[in-house]
Amino acid sequence: MPFRPRRRRIAVTAALVLTAPLLVVGPATADPNNNSPAKLTKAVTLDGVLRHLDAFQAIADEHGDRAAGRPGYRASVDYVVDTLTAAGYDPAVQAFDFPYTEERSELEQLAPTPRTYAVDRDFTRNGFTPTYLGEATAPVTAVDVVVPPGPNPNSNSSGCEASDFAGFTAGTIALLQRGTCGFAQKTLNAQAAGASGVILFNEGQPGRTGLSTPIGDTPGLAIPVVFATYAVGAELAVGGPRTVRVKVDFLSETRTAWNVFAESDEGIADNTVMAGAHLDGVQDGAGINDNGTGSAALLEVAVRMAKVKTNNLVRFAWWGAEEEGLLGSEHYVATLPQAERDRVALYLNFDMVGSPNYFNGIYDGDNSSGTAPPGFIPPGSAEIEDVFEKFYADRGLPAEDTEFSGRSDYGPFIAVGIPAGGLFTGAEGVKTADQAARYGGVAGAAYDPCYHQPCDSNTPVADGADAALYAQLDAAYDLRGNVNAAALDVNADAIATAVITFAFDTSTVNGVRSPGKSHGAGTSSVRITA
Image 1: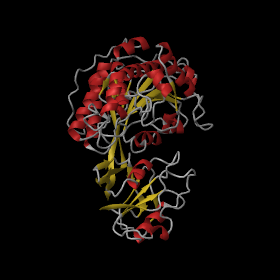
Image 2: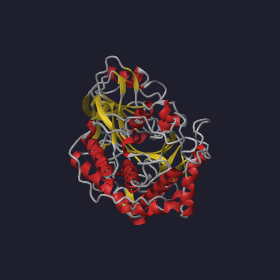
Image 3: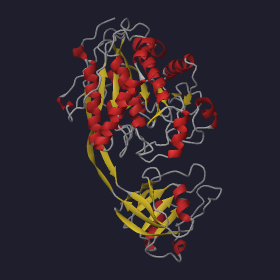
Image 4: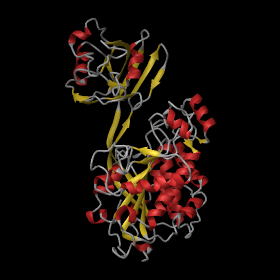
């Protein structure tokens, strides 16, 4: 097994120093003997992972959140770099620019009962050209809406004709329902009728209940417009007069985010094993489950593997701006020369591994559930799935397929033919009765009821979570804030098992049975720069 000296690690640039570093509590005592699944999973403890989550929460408490382009993300990068450095790595930081948007739009009911709706959960602003920035406060007037909806989608014609606004009270806010004609047409008709603002909402049939972004040309638009879920629209449409406030406002500019990397001291660079998790969260929240859990678990695995002499080069990655559209991983793969792509044997992804109402989801690498189109999944991905399936089976734990859709940071890797796999414990989806029987928890509730909300924190109820639901979940499980401690403990071990397994042998995935004999001691030429 050839030795890969420290000087051949990914280079670190001067742009590494971003903010005042956090104190890394309890530097790890990495052990070169953590070289098997049994030894590494013993070294990777729940307490170790939770220590990193506590650090992420402290960052969010200080800065407001850990979203890319904001100070909390910079501090999160510093924490990961400091922790890796203390463990003996020479971490690298890769900078990239991205289109930063700070959403300031609002929708609230003022009367009869005050209620504030959550942006990107209950409503979203429009994407019209142009988009009018401004606000309006007025009673709501429903225009030809159908609640409950008709049986056929795209049959509602609310706001499509000027005649729909006969008797409309000028100055009120028009409540319009999706269907038949375009959002822009509905909006301009409302403006012509004297509306001071518009709330568009989804039609209500299956598949037409959530959020959509209204787009289209709206010449002369001079009123604020938002789009709401069917549930919000139906609520506003019935039950007497309601007064609401609609505000459309946002900041859009170019900002910088960073990916963080750390590599093993030894191993064949021509057969590199990559494992990653996104480090950023959404705005206005700590991002403790999404994706503090994946980032923290991967960080603890990296720390405990720091002195292990692996056969294959192992490259750990913490991605930036995933919540903005997988931008960090896309930048990395897009700027990676083809020769370097060819050296990546496989990629493992860990995005949400401690959801409070969890299930044990494994990316469906063999497409046994039939959710991926032909040719979408690179060969070798099924064999990655096998490793995770064996892990749960060996522990007598339930597990199941989760959609191999490219939704997280493995997407850019599979797009260029690199085999991938990973874990997912659930986001906004709803736990079924069958899953509740297998995993416990609350059927009919989301896997993560605080997904993309401020309550994805160490204190979910104080930050707005449903107190009754979280009391149920806490009674069923051992919750640590918005994290299922038992699920996180198990899945940290699953991560450790997969990483250490492939660090020594990728033969089931790519046929490389004896690294070095066919590839030699390759030295990676890629240089990550800020």
